[in-house]
Image (cartoon, rainbow, N blue to C red; front, side, top):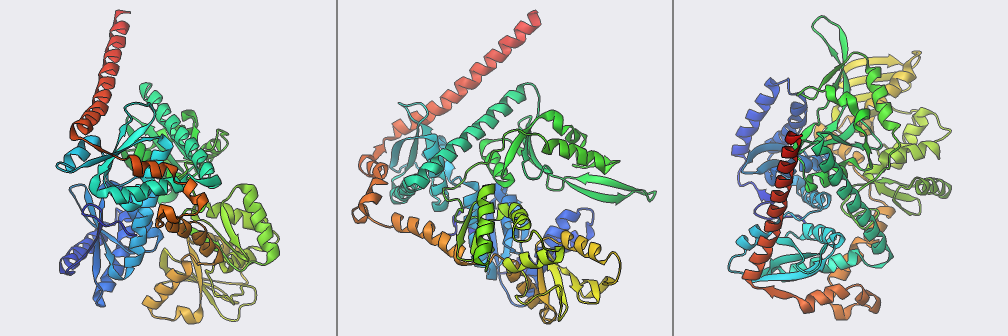
Length: 603
């Protein structure tokens, strides 16, 4: 289900004329402003695709998303290969333009955004909720733990209703939920979903993982608060890639993703430059931390002294590195730190519905046994059915290593490339790189303008059909160059010579299809074993449930029978109580700080 509302949703464009004018302005600006290369590359590709679509009679859609979530939404569109252009930002909303033919993919992107954020878009402060529901009956359901509240937020995110959370008046550490009487039915569904998520053995394991996640998050929040006093910086680093990390300090959170590039100075000298193109700075808060850590995956807290090289960055996020070995040594120092590794939990199922999956298909029985045993040993979540395997996209790097150490262990480099591409459906079924009957063209789904043609004579690099360079197979460094080019291609796919001769539109579509995740028996089984079972449970009346299922929803029944309508004076009192408590705490802390300052002066 796509999230559609006045604040967050999809609107059809009545006309493309206004957009066309703005698109042409955007294209002209992007081409003139070559200095902002990252911006140009990102938007030029989307603008060109949408322009071609309009030129051939297509329509466009406007996606309106909260500006604070816009960058995250764009990443999801990029992963799903949806061309887009960010058009305008006004009143805290960002407008993103997409093609009408991508409607299904865009709807899926909205679902994924909800799944990723794991927080309802309409969770309001108590004051905002009471103000917005003036003249309406307000309902009240009470006594939820922090874990239950997190699960409720996840369920509410996919349903999109407004509610507020307040502290329970009688029990510390418990929370109450306020919502409008008009939303009673949909809130009931969310609470029923909450009970389902925490039910059974899987639910118990999920609860334990959530408790660990909340403990980690609260520990980090406390650490950041403590370091704030001493003006220190807290570093949260991707455990699998130290080039990606978060810094917390001075009330700000900065997301970093480093890359090393070679630049030529005016005098012709070559220098290594470390860049942080994906640098993103925002005020630090609970929600922002959850989203950022979700993107990192497995993380570890690294002491500030091991991250000293970061202090050398200038305001643009770049630093001159006279010797790139210095950076390598610094990163090795980070990697060697053996602090505890942690990962936030965001969904009950190991392969969470809505999460991007990768697949391996058509393995024989021995191969499946060897690979799945290794995956279990490494703690990588997967689903296996017959000769098919499905796993999370975030684990792709680890799965590649598992394949290298199992079924691809004794293979040559070219045989490994061929085996992995066939298992993932990214090449023709009959491709044979050792005895080539016809040339094979390799390209990247993220940059299809470049192609690498490989045949028995050698290799040719093409850009937009024009030869850029070539090398004969008899050349002594042929294989080294081929390996280097393969390694430089992200999201690589292969097509035959016949397929390479298709029209540009057909070729781009084929490349996107070949790169896209292939549904197999494992993905189907996963959806049946979790998503559809839950949906059936949510749509069934209590009396029609099996005896075991009735046990799962005892709290849901209490909600049905003990739901209370809150009079407005009580709701206002609770809202003011929460607000007043925070104000008192802030005033008390301010007094303590002033007292400490006076004592230091007296000394």
